[in-house]
Length: 433
Image (cartoon, rainbow, N blue to C red; front, side, top):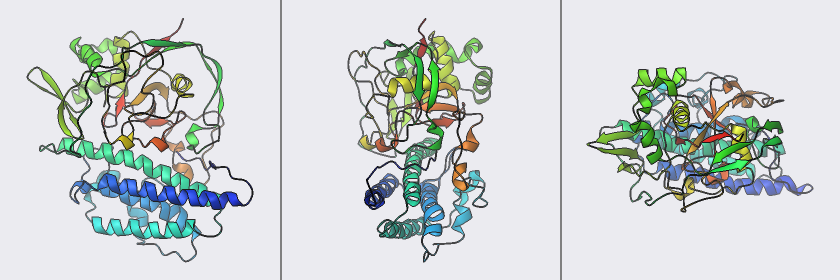
């Protein structure tokens, strides 16, 4: 997710200076947002890593700091002294060109450095980053790397929320990450389908703003006519699938999906529990009764695909999704709302698609593959995306834990098809023939 592309256009020699001022403000805001998200957590909370996909909150704070130190401060500031040379490997995630890294599953064993030391590390790097951005001349290449680092940290903000939710759910005490948040109630918009004509279209990032390398290059795609649901599928609709023995009917499932159902004994989405005749779900605010009007959430690609087959539909391709979203404003239930939980679609009916951004990431039927002409950046930065283009599926649209300034219509998220710990949901599509 790393395309080194200038996104703020200023004329003449003032461009870099003004962009540096803008990025300095953005830098301070993004770093503060991470610390605000971690503030409700104790030092013990920040050590927990409850599944293979997750990382401890302390590690998220350290790794995002490592990114700025490793890729910007160390090579760009002549008088910069690294905070702790040992951190270069300790907080490396997967950049083999940088050096070695500990096994990911062991991150919850790093009791040292203490949380206080990680906080000092963040402060140290922040001071030097502000020094760098306030310099009289900052190259465009450095500014592009800063922008990449900020978007990288926003990705980890969402991961911090999803990871601590899974950690607290794994705890028999079922603690709440946040209090005082009342889930939305009421009915949702009626489900409808809207026709789209398709055609030979140009899709992908056009270079007018920041984008990760996997969103480019912009290219032509033939998209046949299709129909697209006006909102994501709801818990109530998914309950009907469950009541119709959806998890017991192999004809609805992809082969690997049926194997996952059998292996993991799936009978409902992640975080669901039944008490008597009622279903409950674990949320960032603790256990709550299911609201059937909310978008279905925490389902794998396999579950999303089986539900779509049961409904007589299919999942949209990522290109169909982008066609629908291209001209829509980026607004919705995103991280800034502080809900960290999907909410019902507004209104009694809708002609145009709702909730395209926020609430839940929407699985698509598209494998995560490079666009024609894709080339990763040179050096270690090129490892950000390209080497993961195998065995994963694309999700679009962001979730209730995605920062609003981070998401866009061309954004391509990706996970392995059995993944359920993310805020992932379902939107239906079918052919318009």
